[in-house]
Amino acid sequence: MNLEFKDKIDKLVSEVAAIPDLTTKIAVLNYIQQESGFLLWQLEDEQRIDEDSRDY
Image (tube, rainbow, N blue to C red; front, side):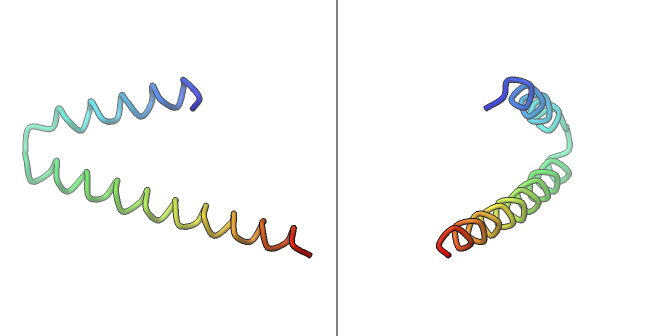
């Protein structure tokens, strides 16, 4: 992984960890999980499409 991306992710994790309100922290983490899950689904779909196009 690119070190720049790792640093950005680490900074975001630190910011979330510093949120004092537990309800807000949970909401933020749930949102991050939802968005990253959607992004992963999109990337896996693109990968399947790419692999299918190579099969022809």
